[in-house]
Image (cartoon, rainbow, N blue to C red; front, side):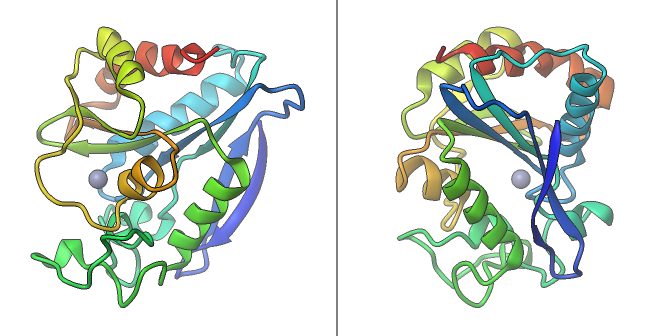
Length: 221
Ligand SMILES: [Zn+2]
C-alpha cells in the first residue's frame, strides 16, 4: 500500500491514508477508523488489516481501489479519548443540513460550527477526492450492529451473513452532523457504520469481522 497524508490534527499529528495503486479500478472504497479515539476496536482491526495486506495474506480484488484511513482522529486515538483535542465529537461536526450547536452531553460537543475541525476537513477531502462507492466507518458500541445509511441495505445484509450482527437503519438516537448523514443521506455515498462490540478482544474482533469486510470488497463487482 502507498501512504499519503491528508491533513494534520489539532496537535499536528499527520492523518495518514493508505491505498493500493490501481489505475484500472472500477470504483473506490473508503474504510475509516478512529473517528472516536476511545473505540480502539476499529483502528486496531484496520491496522491489522493493513499489515496483512502488506504481508500478502490478504489480497485486494484487482478491480477496486481501496483507501484505508485507520486513525482519522489521531489525537483522540493516541490517548483513547472519544473527541479530538478541542473536545469535539467529530461525528457531530460534519456540515450536514441537520447540524446543530445543541448537545446533550459533553461527549457529543459538535464544535463551534460545522467543519470547524482539521480532522473533519481531512474527512471531507478524503470523501471528495476519492468519491468512494461506499464507506465503512469502524466504531464500537455496547450494542453492536451494522448501521447503514443510504442505499446499502443489501451490502449490510451480506456482511451480516458473516459477522452475524443485525443491520439497522437507525442507531437509536439522533446523530446530527454525523458521517452517515453527510455521506449516506446527503451525498449519495452509502455508509456503513460498523459498531463492533465495545471491549471485545482484538483477536475476537478479527475473527468475527474479517470475512464480512472481505466480502464487502467484492460485493458490487
Ligand atoms: Zn463511535
